[in-house]
Image (cartoon, rainbow, N blue to C red):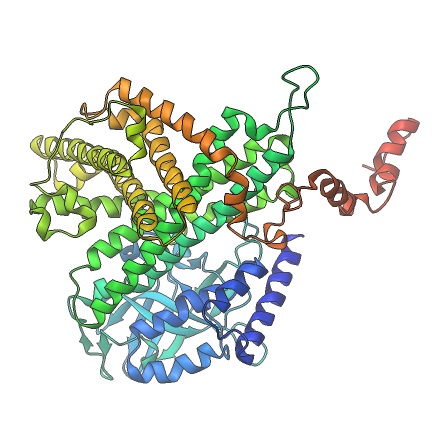
Length: 609
């Protein structure tokens, strides 16, 4: 499909989904999620449900909730979340859009004062949304009170035309996500009523007097973003599961090289090199899925605490969601590409389903927080934990191993490859890796301070080390979530055993991939790394004949997988051929360009250039 056809198809499916929603046919638990998964498209109204409505729920006062939530949930209006600008993204305090309060009319005047201040990238802005939650600087009584949220109607509810003062449109073709109309929004003297500023925490009175929000409000306002990041982690698992399903199924069908005379060609999945590419990714898909469950559980627990006025766990939630979002999307995107490469030339064909999967999902590394910035936010939390110098008992369980009284700089007890079958051995190795990387980052930071640099410059000087430490911490959290989940699962012995194999495979692959970090302080040595390799190679054999059942267990229907290579029936080559025959370019035996260009060339006459 062209980008226009993709957008048209997405809107059509989206409207069908909304009609089913209104009819009450999607009321059952998880019905909405299953339906969206089955449709497998980028809903133009996705931001409406993910951010517009939850923001009003979390940031609006009771009157505003009564005014907006019913019509929003009923899709009488379609909202978007307009934060990112042409010139600013992650640095929220640098946003330039302004909302100036006019007490004479009790209205806010919304303006995009510079070229770089126009909103750029928000989903649904292009051609779908009727309203936007606009993130802007509040100006009242001549004073800049910082960033606040405002509901702005951007299109007519009669004919969908932009309202006066609103210039809005699509930002143009993107790398992927063709079904979503990411757009731009420029405002010139757009007036909105005073009560269109979301005022659960901060208020502006009729005369323009500003009432500051309580100190904890800024922390609570992160809740919607944290929720979206938790969903992103879960979506990473689903996306990687699709990619690895395609690659493993195709690797069983595809045969290459007759290794012994008279024998059939070898299945590609029987080669150790192919197993080394794919089986750690299979383990990663399961690992991220369990990490997503953990993230959702943590979010639910902390939001319940927040409702009771307890904010102690909020920094941990924010840091964990930021780090896992970065780690899991990075792992997923690199995994999709490796799956494509493992499918050889056919993986490059759109028929494989992998190019579009990568094109769509690669944006996850920059939306809802660019990944490096996310890792640095996690690193900031780790930095503060270390500076507090508190005992384990006083720290959240996820970072207790960074406490001052936690045993550090030990040596790994591994003396036999089979010792790596114990997840506790792996978890301790991962903890010691983080401890050492944090120590390296702290040392570089401290040395920078000692040379006379201020804290900002010292942080910048050590930021690469801090991202390495944060990534390692997230790697540990994913492994921990994997182990904890299978340990608590009530499954048969066979399923438990293969899950434990995958858990160890995930952990061992990380040790081999980052062997230098595990050996950094002498916790592990080269002999133990070699043992880790030997054990990983052994586990590859264990997974070989479970690989297809393990991807089948993801239960991804062929219509959702959308891949000739990954079909459940294994009839790859026939479907590749049929897919090629359906290509628009094959509608005619002789292409139009023959008459225009090739015929004159072949007949030695002048072409129609």
